[in-house]
Structure formats: structure tokens, C-alpha cells
Amino acid sequence: MEKEGFNTRAVGSGEIKDKRYGNVVTPIFENATFIYPNSSPERIEDWNTKDSYIYSRWGNPTVSALEKKYASLEGVKNSLSFSSGMAAITSLMLSMELKGKKVLSVIDLYGQTLSFFKNKFHSMTGSKIDLVSTDEINEMDSIPEDYGLVYIESITNPSIRVADVRKMGKLCRESGIKMVVDATFASPYNQNPVRIGADYVVHSGTKYLNGHSDTMSGFIGTDLNMERQFDMRKNLGGSLDAFQAYLIQRGMKTLGLRMERHNSNAMAIAEYLQENSKVIEVFYPGLEDSPYKKIADENLRGYGGMLSFRVKGGLDGARKFLFSSRIISPAPSLGGVESLSTLPVDTSHGSTSAEDRKKMGVTEDMVRFSVGIEDVDDLIEDISNSLAQID
Ligand SMILES: Cc1ncc(COP(=O)(O)O)c(C=O)c1O
Image (tube, rainbow, N blue to C red; front, side, top):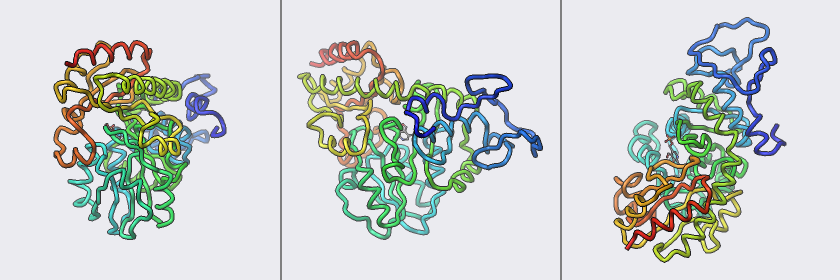
């Protein structure tokens, strides 16, 4: 299956097709428990436990089908799904064998991950986390020996900085250090981190993977053994329900189609914004003059659907833009078919200190925009009308 194209895998990978019924799409196994031990000669085993299914916190056929589809799109041998992106991230981080070594990560992390790293990780694991900027990560030529793990985001929020995953992967490998990449903003269509040097990729499946802003989920993908992560999921209980898994695998079938449109809409809008007199600065790695264009070209297959920009008029100007829109909803999530915009200082970075905001490049006049798949001419007209409201 892996030799087939992205969309063919998105549609066909992992599907449960039972010839006895002739069903063409995966059924929903809404079962908390299963006959155990299952002595049927035709029993189908859980791909994680290699045993028959027993209890849905451990494994469930619909959930396995989703995990196989995700693994195929990510190009990895193994994957686990979770009830949210944070469940995936915390389960992975708590299952790491750090042996007292430190973690190197970035200050411009997703807010909840940052909060977990700053406030919980040390007391739960005994390991410390050092935070630098994504730019500093990109400039590193070696990693000190006291680090056991590097954790980065391949495209950061909301400054849309691009991490050099390939370079960092090489440095990590040379030093025997493991690397985790949160590639939520890129999606597996634009980037497969494990294929370019990461040991683990994590995703908030709530975003592009599902794509319809109506379910929560998280994923870990890797070529390594996942016994420890599987065990952590069983312990912490962040497993996905069969009905959610069904909806997510349904959304995933169109990931490639949606990402093509997200990529092209965002590029056209970034170029439009650059020319608008009410806009001070645009952050999008596809722009020719973006400081991240070269790194993006070396690490991504597409520049993605996320962009940020600064408007004239400070916080008032940004709020005026946000609430003048007819098509773009002012809401904080991302990666769905519908366009959403948000002010990081009012939402994700509301409780971030002024000093940290500065390091992250977050300003009061910054709008973060998750570009949807609507017709781009309609979006540009809507944006133009909203910008015109700014004095
Ligand atoms: C980059 C990134 N990682 C992780 C998460 C956490 O995912 P979830 O909200 O599904 O727990 C988010 C959520 O916005 C995110 O943007």
C-alpha cells in the first residue's frame, strides 16, 4: 500500500472490509468489551497487542483501522491514537526513558504543551526542560550531551516559524538523542517528520487530520516499538472511542484534497495581504521574502494553511478585523474546512508573560488565520472588506 499515492492510501488504507457482508467502508465497533479469550479460528487480532480484542481502552477494531490509515499517511510502521492531541503528547513524554537527561525544546510551543513542560514535566519525571527559540534550534551545530531528547514543532504557533527538522534530526542521530516533532500545522500531506529524521511524530488530530472541527483526537507515529506508549495509554486512559475514530477516518480520506486547497488558498491570501496598505507584516513560509522559505522548501512539501499577519491600529485594529468578517469565524482552533481567525493575545497567549511573548514574536496587532477551503476570491473579498474597517 505504501507505494501508492497519498490520496489512494487516504481512501483505502486500514479499511475493514468483511467479504461476508460486502461492506465498502469501515464499520463502527461501538463495544466496550469483546469475547475473551476468543478461540475462533477466524479471530482478528489487535495490531498493537497481537492478541484478540478484549477491552476498548486497550484497543478497538475501528480505532485500529484509523491508526493503520494514519500510519500509512505518515509512512511509519507503528501508530497510536488518543482522545486528544494533549493526551498523545503527555503519554509520549511520560513514557520516554530519559535516565535523568534533560529535554531541549522551544519557547514557541503550543501553549498547553508549554504549560505541561514548564509546570508538570519535571515533578513527574525528574527531568528538566530547557527552552530556546526555534531560530536558535535552527542555528545549532551540535547538541550538548546532557540532553536525552529534543522536542520541537515543525511550524510554530502563531509566528509560523519553520523548524529545520532534517538538520535537527541529523544532529540528534549523531549524538544518539531522540527527537519528537509536533507536525500538527503541517499535516502528513505536507510533511512526514519520521521520514526526514525524527523518531516520533505527534499530531493534534483535532486539526487537519479530521479536518471538520467536530472531533478531538491525537496521534503518535514512529518506526520504533510502541510498547511503552501503549502501556501509558492503558494507564492514563486517553484512548479514542470507536465513534470518534469512525468520524476521523472519514475526514482523513480527504486530507490530501483539503490540504491542496489549504496550501493554495493560504498562498494567494498571503500574497494579497502583503499588498494591502492596512497590513504591516505577513508571516507565511511560502512568501519569497520569508526568512523561513529556504528551510520550508527543504522540509515541507507544501507551505500549509496557517498564516499570521499584523494590522495597523494595534489591538483595536486587530479586533476590528476579527469581528467584521462575514465568512471567517473568530474562533481559536485550526485545520478545519472553514476559515477561522483569532487574536493570540486574546486566546492562546493571553496568559503568556510579555517577555515570553516578545521571544515568540507575538504582538497585540497579530491575527492568526487558519485558511479554510472556501473559494479564495470570496475569502479575499471578505478580508478586504474587514481590513477596510480599520481606520
Ligand atoms: C500544535 C498543537 N499541538 C497540540 C495541540 C493539542 O491538541 P488537542 O487540542 O487536540 O489536545 C494543539 C491544539 O491546538 C496544537 O495546536
